[in-house]
Figure 1 (cartoon, rainbow, N blue to C red):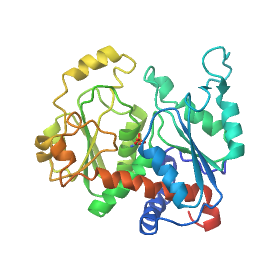
Figure 2 (cartoon, rainbow, N blue to C red; figure 1 turned 90 degrees about the vertical axis):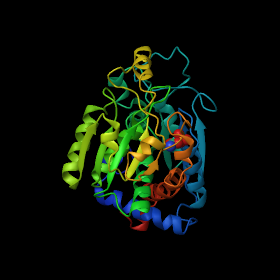
Figure 3 (cartoon, protein in one colour; figure 1 turned 135 degrees about the vertical axis):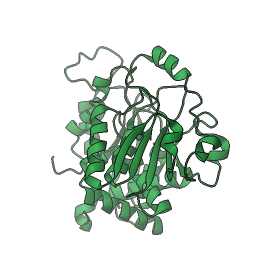
Figure 4 (cartoon, protein in one colour; figure 1 turned 120 degrees about the horizontal axis):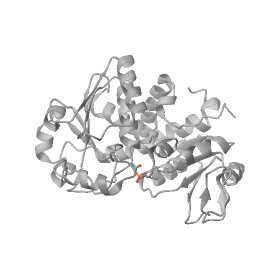
Amino acid sequence: MNSLRHLESLQKLPLPTVRALLDRAVDFRRVPRQPLLEGKKLGLVFFNPSLRTRVSFQAAMADLGGQAFALDVGGGLWKIEVEDGKVMDGDAAEHVKEAVKVLSRYVDALGVRAFAEGKDWATDRADPVLAAFLRHSDVPVVNMESGLYHPCQALADMRTIEDKLGAVKGKKVALVWAWHPKPLPLAVPQSFALAASRLGAELTIVAPEGYGLDPAVQTAVENNARASGGSERIVSDRAEGLAGAEVAYVKSWGSLDLYGRPAEEAKHRAGLRHWIFDEAAHRMTAGAIVMHCLPVRRNVVISDPVLDGPRSVVYDQAENRLHVQKAILEWMLAGERQGRP
Ligand code: CP
């Protein structure tokens, strides 16, 4: 089953494939309805809630002539156990092995969303649910956000920067942390940093002390920047980090230093509430476009005037999920037939 076109992380795809997907998304924006996946079926398995991912994948399959089924674990689906060898005398009625093997008989591809549990990073960084899907599936699997990565979001983000600024290469891009009442997952900032560095951005990660990325991801970001001719730095002074930025990618994420210790993390984060991306923060940039993956807490993460302002591109960014995912689905399901990369 090694020949299946899984999408776990953009980092695992060859750069020319990433480039081809970004270019192909523009075709799909120009001609949204193309019957390339007629008769194909996509099963979307959600362990966590979603608006954009759920609807954009369903809309993408409809536009390409196929069908998508959204399945909610613990809602419409049985609770699923992912641990191998587990004595299943708890809540879960079905093991992931049976669930995925059976779904593989019904659909042509699977999507899976399973966030980190937030208890132990060593466990979460292995992405146990996604890994189980990849292990047991007989059809291609697309990661719809795991503990480590959100590749569909990162591809839409790169598409958006190229749409607005012409290229990612050489652009001054700030990935800027923002305060949030909860310690949020790292998948979005990690995938964004990996993709931007791989495409040659001058990337600055602007975050308070203790809010670094996973060390292996951070090393990959640094290696990407070296290979792409871009640059990468980490700055904890917000004004310094935002100076000259052409892109401000605003995102909150939890501290790995205090992972699984929510009370301590909350105490630490309490002093960082001024890290809202407001007009004062935007003035620190060079008139940057403002990006956020959404959902966003208004006037907590980004202020109304910035989110509704002329430099906000969040709706175009969300729309690009639809276009890039069509490119991904074509690559997964029709790539060989279409002779595409
Ligand atoms: N950005 C994103 O993935 O949105 P949803 O969580 O609503 O799918």
